[in-house]
Amino acid sequence: MEDKLNVAIVLKPQGIRGEVKVKALCDSAEDLKGLKRVFIDGVEYGVLGVRAQGETGYISLKGIFDRNAAEHLRGKDIFALRDDMPPLPEDRFYIADLTGCAVVASSGEEIGEVVSVTPARTDIYTITTTKGEVSFAAAEGVIEEIDVQSKKITVNEKRFKEVSV
Image (cartoon, rainbow, N blue to C red; front, side, top):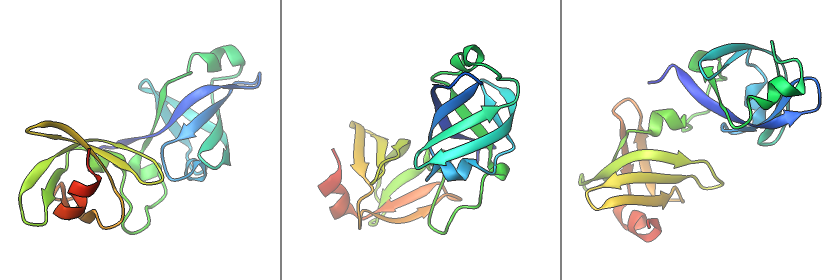
């Protein structure tokens, strides 16, 4: 499992005092409030403050004191140490833990490997198969079990075929 998790993306500077507007890649920007430090391009920044509004957050970083400095962070990924993040509820997983998992039908047949997960109301999993890339929605009844320790996701074959493209 990775030590650092991609938790947000800098959208743009906010105001003139160096604050940045971010899109949270976790369940809510509220999850960013407990962070004391983040990493952008491998550089560690102390977190001075976080305001949250749903998926959007506003972060003040140590060393970023004006709009010009904040502008250099536009479009950058924000990472946090796994240990600094709040504990996950049961049956919730970090995308970093799902990437690389084998996707297997309940019959045992291997379907492919997860290459990405797009967060949405119903997350979209993209997997590589012998026939190319396939995407599927994690709709109700599709995923039967996720075992991140074994790097394995078991899907209901019938439901998987109904929702995959």
